[in-house]
Image (cartoon, rainbow, N blue to C red; front, side):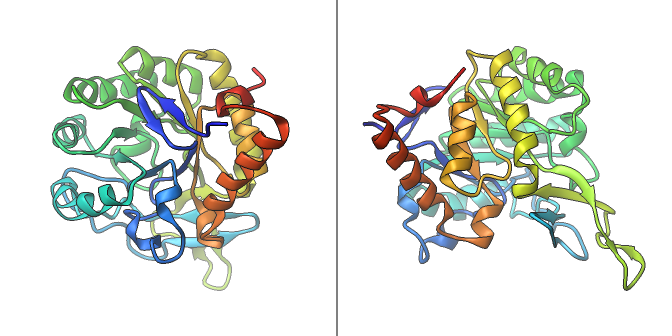
Length: 300
């Protein structure tokens, strides 16, 4: 039995990846779990220049979910490469840099810097709902998605490109097709769903930005349906699934739906060992079912 998977030429020791924005730069959890066991780590969203993030409340718990409005707080790509990447590389799992931006030019400049670094893959984030410029604005329309993907693809001469799609797109398949045609090697979805909360004591929206991104178990059935549809439409493109995955059974559903791997995010906040237990659970299921590789789990 072999738990490894290959996505756009990148080999991961297993199909479980820490989702962007939920795992810092890997070292934050090193004293809690054996981070070296993960298949991969997606960095926090990185922009060309440093960002302070959003003001006000940033996280708000909901029934079976979590709302966040972090706003892509990060030190900027040059600082990440200099200060964070060496430590992240030393941990062991594949390093996937989540690239964000406000303009096409920022995306391209950031991609060029990451292309010259030691990251293994770039995940182009065109789906963040928590920023006022860029982010999800690129992921809602096929033409805008292609315009963001093309220059990043040109800049990444040495790295595979995965594009992170928004579940808020009116026509997800059309956006995905535009990204694939523009050079995406893989696709990841879903990012958070646009949502909001109201503070009834103070009679005002909880978040300064009004809306925020909803993640957690509440979105899993919708995310699963979207992943199923995407895998059916693009059988030759690796799809990395995320959205409410909290246990091995959740991950197995997405792998059976056709996903090549999964990302785990909000579950780590509630239970830091979730990803390790998911890896063990997948391995146990495969052993009991006499399945030799994760790719054989698909029921497509």
